[in-house]
Length: 119
Image 1 (cartoon, rainbow, N blue to C red):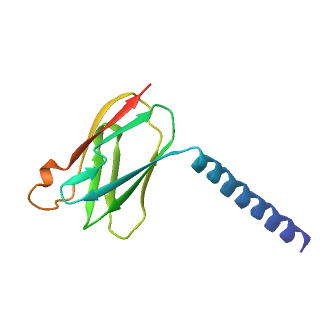
Image 2: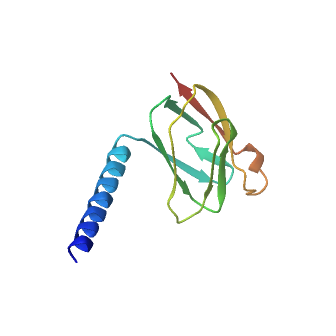
């Protein structure tokens, strides 16, 4: 019985420490809000700093969209009414185009933007 209590206590401590370290990491993130609607992202240009964690928080105003930035190996579906968060830490500087990869109608091919990562 005593060993079960010790194991449970150790498990609870581990969970609390894990949650605490997650909250600390989240506090240090740069948060960028991005809105997607038929044929456009807002903002279209995002500037980030190499090595700084970032959370891209997407909102769709109308329908399912996609976000694909092949140069940074980023991909997410942007679903209306859902939390759409993409977390990453840029590990290289440069200019990286992104686009919608879920067809959203005539004009879809113009739904593009740019991530600029500085040193």
